[in-house]
Image (cartoon, rainbow, N blue to C red; front, side, top):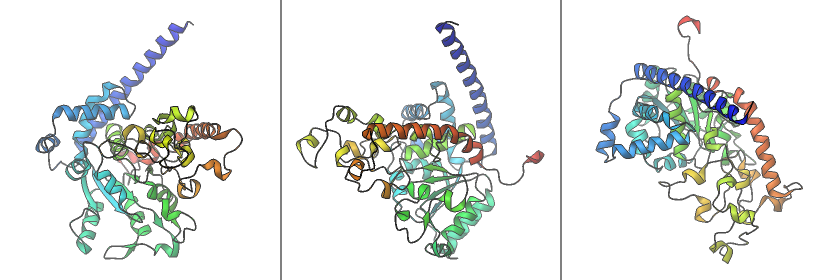
Length: 399
């Protein structure tokens, strides 16, 4: 078989695959429009009242299509998904955290989070944003669980302290522990999204010596989760995950740590604007030196980009204005488990701790990449979207 025949066959297979995927997407969008609660407001009207032009909205949808690694033919589907996003019930729990994830996502790039979560997503419960308090707040949560069992998305911000039977964290007028609250809510959720490294992996609360025995949600509750890691994470990764769920009724492919591959499939090191300086051996030696002023590589002053998987350099923060390495500070590896312990000290290279085997940082980074790729391929089956999105109760036919 000639090379041209191989490419021709691959193109035909690709076309057939995407045609089938489009049909699946259309069917699921139709199902969502039929089954989801009615929207209180129309997205088009919301965008118009906020001065957002339709053209800008369509442009954003195209960018999100590309970010989700879908071809442009899905642009119109993604527009539909975004337009019905305000019909997805969301219950957001705040556990052992600093509220930094909520703050970061509130400042995400257009369409900003005020429009997405306050005007678009049907936010049934969020302790930080909720006007009610005490028993009134408890009633809001109980009503959401009763009204939308198996249909709402549970978003968890913060780790779960397990020490002293969870008593390091008690919440609400009824004094439930974080563990009790999370277990009760997640049991009735369609899926569980952990936003931030605290709920994903425990983060700073779980750093040594971890006196409260803080754990990530997956480890504490023994349930599958989708982990939007970062301290804080980027709101684009959260929104993109929700859009994929609306499009297909499933989550994007996840790596072995439960992170969406489209957002966490590449190293910071791979797309860093300072990478050419790394390859040329041009490093900042100390803060404020002439090399720092020239924008050279920050590895020697602690950048953990070669060991960190995230898309920070692509989506950036604060309306897409910048990200830590661009601003002049090295990556601290905040999307990785136990980074407070494994990446410390944050302003010294790991090589200085004799943790780098023979071959140097690039050899190690490549080994990490190979290992994660292998683990991802194995993990996609384990963490398949179908296992993450859970059905509560029995459907017709006993499925």
